[in-house]
Amino acid sequence: MLSVEDVARHFGLRPDTVRRKIRTGEIDAIRIGRVYRLAWPDVWACEDGPMPKRARFPRYQDDLICKKTIAAALRVSVRTVERWIADGLPTRNVFETVRCNPHDVTDWLKLRGVELPIGWWT
Image 1 (cartoon, rainbow, N blue to C red):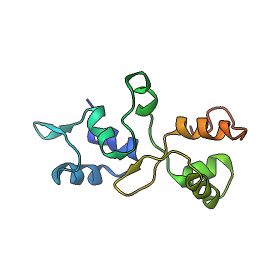
Image 2 (cartoon, rainbow, N blue to C red; image 1 turned 180 degrees about the vertical axis):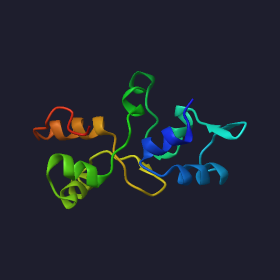
Image 3 (cartoon, rainbow, N blue to C red; image 1 turned 120 degrees about the vertical axis):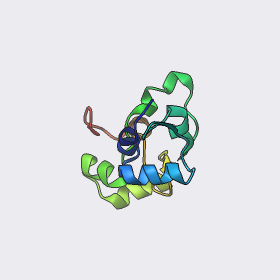
């Protein structure tokens, strides 16, 4: 089970935003005393993207990254990242904000012959 802080870090949001989404019913959570707990399938259900297959669960538990983070890590412009998204770079949209799974970005760019430094997103 994940804490609100874990989910906020995964989505790249503030914990208060996650709590508000729980209260409005946009994220399913269990309340234990005064603390909310969330399961991975409920977290992934908030992402506008396919539910990961069981074999890929660990891959989709990594924190999502934003366009600005991708651009800075790869030393390209945000506009370049936006072009990649328009060309099919997989995204995981979370409450109308675009986020990407770093593994999906790595796979997509490697297929296009882009050389990536090891651990580029960390």
